[in-house]
Length: 217
Image (cartoon, rainbow, N blue to C red; front, side):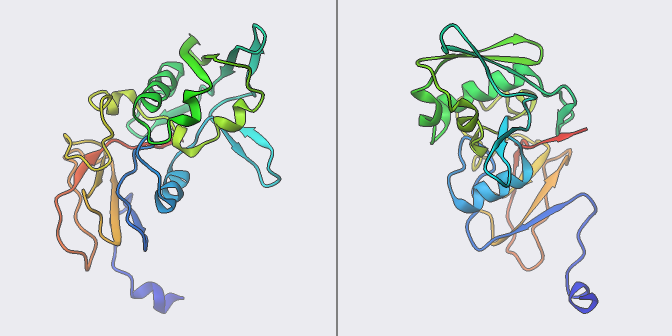
């Protein structure tokens, strides 16, 4: 193992290097549909809920399962209060509302919510309210989709009308190439949005894409 490690090119501290046989064209949750993309998004971000090893739905960014009222047509979801996005902004109900509305408007898999959710609102600083088109006992399972990973409204405020996974954008916290090579560098929190290509890869001009991921800060 030490011999193999010595063959690897050095990488700057804090830089995430992703190697994949498949094309990684986007890390925008509304734009990710490939297996490689969902794998990467699963490693970087969290939805409201997720399945544990036994298949049971457990809260991730939520703190409890949905609480239903009005005949099952309104769901209230309490959110964690100790989470920040990679850009340092706070995760709260406003961020979740922004992300879900953006998903409904832009996502390639928006059908996950289209037939179920009529309206999204914040019923408190850390409580989400979903008005449903019909009762949905499996709502927590629906909300466990990795494509429902929230994004920072601060970082994505200029990208509410179109996915930003492959577009050439203004500088942001994460650099990503428009057409990633088989080995791509994902650089968090670069002030200029510039990211050097991995060793052995042809040169490219990176797009600056806001991070889709959440992490306790």
